[in-house]
Image 1 (tube, rainbow, N blue to C red):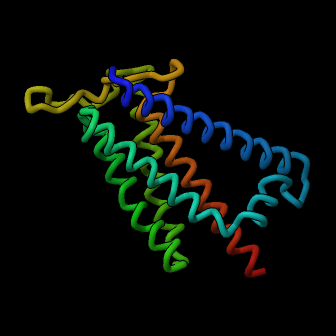
Image 2 (spheres, helix red, strand yellow):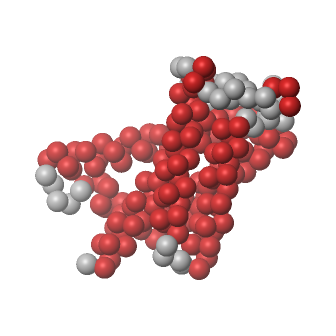
Length: 191
């Protein structure tokens, strides 16, 4: 691998791991508040209150990085996307426009669209990661003769577990959580 590929793998994989750590911390905060019966929701509610204006711009940046990275991997580095990767792109790319408009025009309904697209995308990416990592026979049989790439191909596994589908899964889940937090912040301001 050349240095661009190695550096991109490292940076995007670190981003995915940081995103996963953030998701675990948010989930643990929510779970602690739920189990303890604390009405203030500790960290999660503080984040929503303090940073509600930043949820959409941060979500936009996350999606922009994911779209840019996927285009770098396919168009510059030459990783040919498989069928499941294409479906993940179909579900990710429109969110760049939706979130961009939400940030620019302050639209209210962007969260539900992104939540829907990300929920479906998380299922596709999660299934893809499962197939690549644990059960390649569960993945669709791709037409290799027509030039398609098999969905079971792992172009890399940074840190031993971070693959392209895991990065996409992490991105979709981060966007889902961001949209849920955004919708809850709107409810808080209405009360």
